[in-house]
Length: 328
Image (cartoon, rainbow, N blue to C red; front, side, top):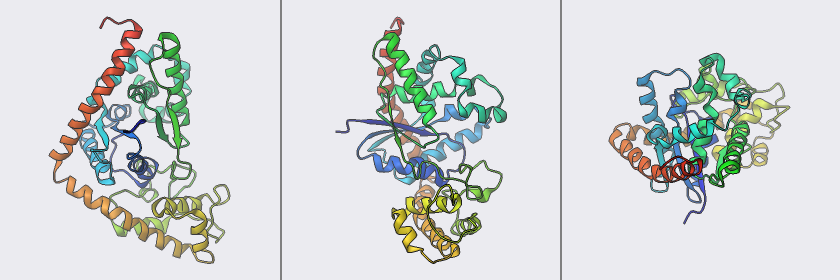
């Protein structure tokens, strides 16, 4: 019996890259035997920035297929689409009434995204909906990158505010931070997080990139003037990022990687890293391609997931509404 719950999710916004995989999905796969995982496809969050309706539909199904292809087991975890659970927006509205606008305006993501999407209410309220996502499932632990601590602390603060005002109802989740792979950086600029929206398509490796494309992208990845292959984030951020990727896919300790490539060139290291990525991504690609031929199976998984998720979400919302004073 799994005693603790994890909620996490990814916005459906096109093909996923290895940063999404290492920073989120791979962790969920490893944690699903110990925790009850609610693996959400965050389509409500996706519309806070411009996206075409057809693209949203396609990307939602694509994200579900990536979850399954990467090893999230619907027998062990609950895979669901956020918009299929109406309780998310209802709890978010209640939490909105406890949230000062000033706190939302200080959120890093709002500052970064407002130029792209404009100052829209949905973008401003993004963190409140994100908090509702987590609190709705009485989540114990949230796997996050080190750049997401602000959002989780905001969620914890809202849970405390609700509990202090209405009585203990919502659980304050704790962070599970994966330091080394929580934030994979761009191959062309180690100061920026890997992103598929980057102008330079060589800056990220898609989970569906062909072997030739993977090798080309790794070969063109920036390194450092110093030739030694060692992990030192401040002194050698580019090479350290590549070592972090190697470490995550091989499970070989950083020190072992450094020993293995002592006295060797960047070219040798990059060749082996590219070969490793091809080896690890090929099974995911094969599984994804099979799922794309049977979308009825994928839709069935999402329907079952929505049924499972709604049981928990409804109970939490019902309790919250009673505490607030709504007539039930």
